[in-house]
Image 1 (cartoon, helix red, strand yellow):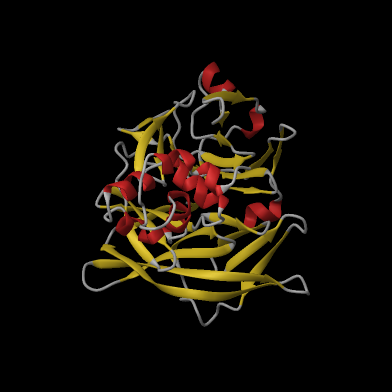
Image 2: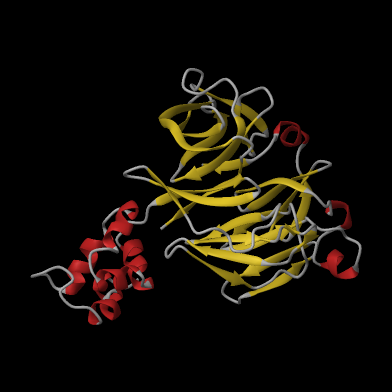
Length: 357
């Protein structure tokens, strides 16, 4: 791995006096340590700083210096439009993002590195193969290689820096049958079909997660599990099927979701058991409407919808640190909890995911 000074050479050579009386490579390392939430202010300092913050080298230096920060990206449906936000840390600031130029209903989402991939979705009631990519470093959209078939409400997961997507399409042609599942390799820049047995090919996929390099997805009738390393397919256990409700995320190898009894539960795939996440009884509302979860820097972050004032709805967020107890149980402690956004009544949380930038 190159040193911060060597990684910054191309950027520093094109700038001068980034910080008076400091060599540019040292100045660049100082700037790279500034929290992500303060970058909009840095862009206003001068032209040379704006140029530095718009370069890939700058973010490479942040990675080398271990200054990358996990931020929560939130998509909310407001009045039939999709609005994007980022919740930065230290300090905690929710900021709006450029909207998706071609929004669709029922897209799948995946993140690799600093990029969020928006996969397919329904456009004018037609499943789309379009892939749109949001680069979290620079806050801009770009088009990615199209999938082989159009999809809506598909399942997606990332294993070994490759995106796997499955379902979301009717298997009514040979092409759709052969490409019910496919994989995108960013290094090659193209999609390839993944062979799948007929018995797993459900159309609608309601939720998905990656646990220990395996992709789990829930469909109308049960669920499927795929292990890319061995190309093996199978069905999920009855215990997992009965307990998985709604959106889920994985923290330290345990799959968490919010169940119909108003509890956050974790599924340990090794033990094959659901366990209640205890310790939250006094810190969270009894019911979390529209609960959505993400793993942000190793902590469980939960978002939910609640009543606001008048014609507004509030979106609240809580960050939970999780401890595995000696008796095998799960216990959570709330790091912080607050209302982060007010939107018109009738809005809804679509998705959330974490990206390190």
